[in-house]
Image (cartoon, rainbow, N blue to C red; front, side, top):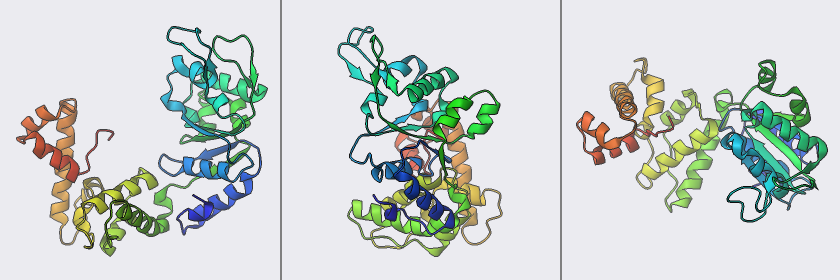
Length: 318
């Protein structure tokens, strides 16, 4: 993907693209800030692709997914025999990114002690594997990303100020989708074409009413949530037929019409869908997501419950 392939019409995203282009050829660290689902990794990959390190490794890591006891072995690597199970040498994330880019996603989720170890690597430009007596030099560019306000985290004592100044030499802020609603129609068209082609169908036309609903919805999951919604609608739509409001997910309908202010034809059906969704989710939570027991409680077969989960777009992560 190229910068020109980013889909947008908003002024906010235009500024992001222009800034990313300007800083791509520098070697300075970059901090990308924005809510989950706004496209932070996409921007990081494009910066790397258009940098002098293009062709060298781009190594992404979700900092929040690495438990603290595994931190050093994952980031710094280890020597064979360093601990039980270390049967061979293994390079860490920083070594793997040597001469390329290390993308530290959700860096704000690291503990303060882990932050100190990251800071030392960035200052010294060298790493020492667990079980090794010598440090090795590395040449990496760091692009970090966070969905947190790191200045607020610093004031709360949860993020090191010295690490912040080390990683935030250049900063890019990604605006949430709800604050750039003009991008929604072009993103819908892009995702509809993408997924229709992927499954070998004609590209469906989304009714103007659906687009209007999308513009009013808050999109807490941002572009990622919009992409998943369009993917789902393309998969469920009749080949070649327009997509109307009845294929819109229950969570969207519940937010838009759950308070009874939706008005117009179909409002009752949408409110009932929102209520049905709430009851099913509460029952699943009650039984620890044991679908057999939840279905029995609701007077459904397990297969019937699965059909409702699919129709109402209910997933456990919610």
